[in-house]
Length: 552
Ligand code: SF4
Image (cartoon, rainbow, N blue to C red; front, side):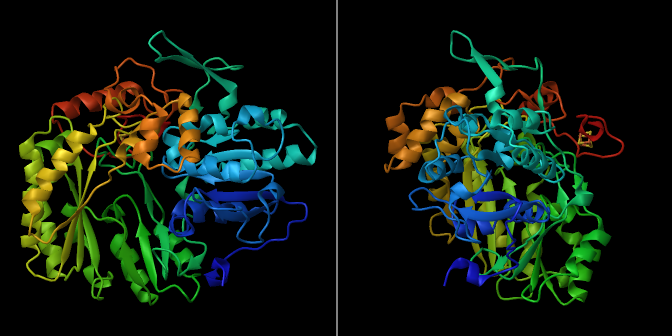
């Protein structure tokens, strides 16, 4: 039995006269089908009369890519569209092109399908993969994908050359055609300037979608995902708390919510296989009509589950309508740092008391699994801050008051992401990271608290902060069977340059050619406030002009 036989909601369209698009998720089927962005794109593309969209999932080392819906070869499609949420998936994307007998470098392809990529990793920094892509989509897909498809469809119908179609696409907001830009470097090898070859001064404006048109929710249901009988429904985008390391608080600004009436309407048409609604938002407890929504979900005979809750706002919940009475009630708290002093650096305004109250609240409601998220490598961090991670985890376990809850902690090195106030920082060295992890492990010994951490964070740091000169590095990684650590060593990549060093505040960053709607000075000011441990109050859309995005 193939995966498609276990799916419900799959869309199979006739091909005649339509633009065939292969939507590629460069990771496993399970990972892709658990990804809301993939469902959203699949739904949008197939809602267009002139488009037929099929899926393909790809992980390095697989053989013979074919579409899921009709078993077609990659060469049958006019557009190959990658949906990329994680930077390290750039490696799988390049492997996919080669496995499909497509020349990976765009400069070597004068005809053939248009290769494009979108998703949050691309929106933050498309440069490391830019040598392989004809087109990158910067920002949110809703409201933009339709224009892109129309340009390509019209161009192919009238037998226009690929170069002509790319020029037309270059006129759309949020569309980046990497081959139209050149990059100049100074004698130290740092980027000096990056310019459009034909339109001097042009910057790529991030596309912000109106959420009123949002259809970001599960389209295909299958048991082969993390959320088997669950319908995922996005209710908000952008987080008003703006933690200084977090992309939800910057790359998705301004904070927006979907209308309750629209959500209710959508939820009424769910197929019978759905038993649960997963409410998706950077901070579910921020959705202004949350209790009404929970009541409604309960009233139509479904259960609700939530992606993320803020520890200081749990008490507002109408807890009876949450999936908390079942055998497996899991929750997560993200203190991020062990001490309030470091939380202020992050702009995470949560006291130990609020965190412990949240744990007690969850304990009273019989939570079975609790996951805690922490960062290491925060500026100004000391060994006492590291020890405080373990001690806070132990206090949280105690506050749960009951032996049944399994507590685990995820501790990850801070990777300063583009377009956040921390974008100039470097990441910590591997030996430092290991030492910090060992301190926490030692303090948690015999506590029953499990610890996990991302050992290959350096790869993510190199790619997410890299430039277009990383193309050979990505090809090398897609080509080798060696472990990640060996492959990085063998490649000779300059880890200090790409990942470890702190960048100059006046340095041209590889992602500076994009316009996010706020100025670099806004981020720099936030960075400086962070270094002083000063808290910035949350967004107040409608009355605030602080970053300028609300009037972008
Ligand atoms: S203008 Fe103010 S409310 Fe709007 S996104 Fe910027 S900080 Fe937030």
